[in-house]
Image 1: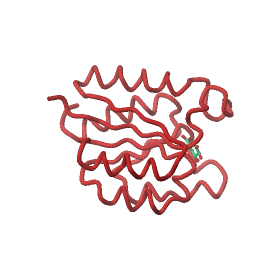
Image 2: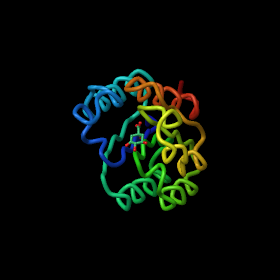
Image 3: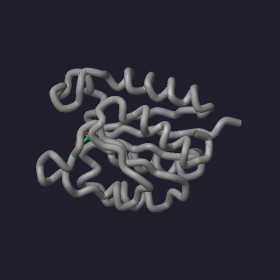
Image 4: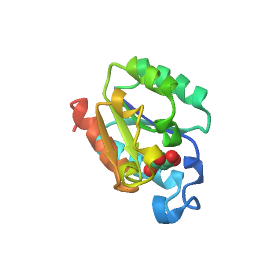
Length: 147
Ligand code: DQA
């Protein structure tokens, strides 16, 4: 059976395409999912791709990834900078966790310089725009020995 990679997206990422395109680009979340699917197909991985605006739902999905996913990719959106609950859920995940951002939060406002995801992640991909999603799938494959 193909290893499963879960890609979870947090609040406001359902608005990609129209949301601040000068920062996040013009690709929609569906475009990003298609990128991930293409990368996963090429690497022999199965993909689960989800988005929620709700912190508790994301926590539930992270708990699910703990047992169901070989690797987890997480763009937690603004919850990156605020959520101890997401940090705590990630600490229970034994497999690789990749923090992902379209923008580079370190070049932006000071409140984006703190990440509660990074301190519970294997590595971080940020600032590469939509291509970061493809890079994250490649990184996940490497980390689980499939790339
Ligand atoms: C983001 C960066 C976050 O600071 C922001 O709150 C987002 C998107 C990114 O992908 O660049 O919602 O995670």
